[in-house]
Every structure is written in structure tokens, then in C-alpha cells.
Image 1 (cartoon, helix red, strand yellow):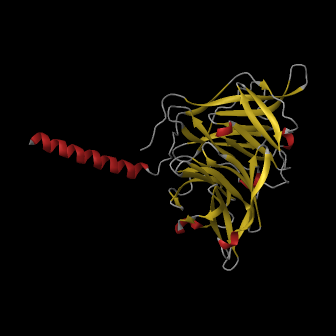
Image 2 (tube, helix red, strand yellow):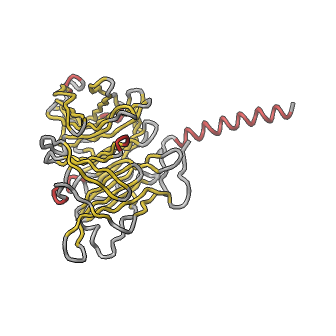
Image 3 (cartoon, one colour):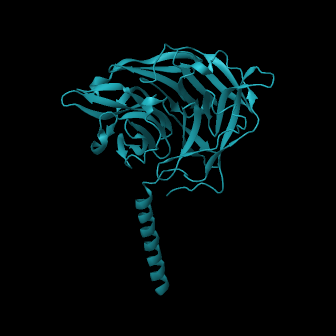
Length: 373
């Protein structure tokens, strides 16, 4: 009898402890925050960029896992596909787009795991256009869809940028957009969210927690990245305080804010510098874990960051640069699943300019990453 009682009490203790842990841990970042870094190869590899000029490179980057390729879409409308072959990168031009602005454009991946595709879109006024990359050419799949039906009385403020990411739901990848909405009377700013699925090739509006739907005027978006279990890191810029990140959740067509904006990272506001590049890398394992990575070229220097448990950005290791040839040069950063390629121009020993790539791999530095309950 005593044995059964102790066993019963033990079960209650386990259940109670587990419930308490879930309650306490649910606000933590759903990824390892301590033991991540980039391990760089010391040798660079030459690359031919097929017409891509690094000095004029300003655009959107997106990795498509099923194609084992990363795409760069330049603001002038020219586009390139990068594939990795061992340690070397191959760069090939693909179909071009019309010129676009980073303010009102976005990219994401959508479709089943086996048939996922790259999508590019723009918002003009309250109309949205969407293009799908098929066999190296762009096909329009959404033509000037009117978004005012989703947001009556509001206008989309593309001057505050559009944040986009790929999120997976029930085995299907979907495109998620967030942007700022404005009303004149009364004057206010709100967040808006759209979701796109290839099963029904139209956008649908997603509800946002009313407590966090309205935002301070002047706040703009710096990017977003899906991490795990429907969670998303949303970057927001504060003109007077710098940038900060928030953990949100997208489940059952509802956006919920799990944390208030994190500690401001101390960098100047985004309005005074190029926008962030926020993208996922995977920590290779039996069960790969997605990790958010942040990169920016600011004050003539490229920096790469991870995010700690307090949502504060911490610098990651950069390629070895003893002679100051790399870090201060204009560069292009390309994510490839668990690897990151750094493309830049160096001066060779003979004095000639040479375009090269450096490869870094996402690794744990001391121990296995913690998996939060």
C-alpha cells in the first residue's frame, strides 16, 4: 500500500513539476542562446559573379532548401542563383524583375517540402503583387490584389518597411508578412499581418493580439525570422532608441506577443544605415534546430550576431582578417542551411582585384544545445 502511495505521489510530483516548467519556460527563446558560433575556413575560394557588382549589391536574399540554392534579388531587377559545390560557390543569373525598392518588397518560400518555391512580391498603395520563380523565370500568381478589404479605413505604410519570413504549418511552408498600417482620423499606427499558402494562392489576413496591435508612431520593421513551433522573431526599429526584437507566435490564424520588445541593442537607428539581414541557419544534428542570425554592414564594417536569452544581440566570430582585407570591404552574405558564405573582393598578391568567398559553419562551442521544454 505504501509503495502504491509513493508511486502515486511521484506521478503527481512529475506532472506538477512539468506544468510549472512549461509555465516558466514558455517565454524563453525556442533555440540555444549560449553555445553558438561560426567556424570559418581559413582559406578563401575564388568565385565568378556573372555580372553581379558587389559595390552596387542591395537587395533581398532567400535560401530554398529543396533546391539547395540561395537567391539574391538586386534592387535593379537583376537576380542570381547561388549553388554550393563542395567548398566552391557557383553563381548564375536567372530571370529578371522590374526594379524595386527594399521598402515595399519581400521574399519567402512556400509550398510542400518536396515542391517548395521562391516567391517575390511588392506592395504599392493597398495593392499586392506576387511572383513565383519557375524554371529560372518569374510568373505572376497574384495580380494587384486589393488589401483594403482586409484593412478597411487603413493604408499600408511601406515607408516603415515590410518584414517577411517562411513559416511551416502542418508540413506546408507558407509566406508570412508583417507591415505597418496607418489611419488619419484618429491618427494611429497598427501592425498588419498576411499569410500566403500555395494551396489557396491568395493572401489572408491574420488577427493580431489587440493589446499589441496598435504601436507607437514612428516605429518601423527591420525584419523577421521563423524559429520553431510557430514562433517568430520580429525586429522593430525605434528612431530614438535603436532596434529591438520581440518573440511572437503564429497559431490558429492568430498573432500573440510572447514577450515585450527586448533590450535595445545600442546600435544607431536603422533609418541612418542599411537594413538588417535576418535569416535562419540550422544547427546540423539528428534533429536540426533552426537558429536566428543577424547581419548588418554598418560604418564600413560587416557584423554578424546571435541573440542571447535576454534577446540582446551578441557578436559572432568573423572570418580571419589579419591584414584588414575583408571586414571593411563591401560584402554579400548568403545563408545555406547550416553554412554561411561571405563574398567580398580582395587584392591578390599580384595587385589585381579578386572576388572570393569564405565559408563559415554554425557550430556549438562547448556542448549540445539546450532544447527548451
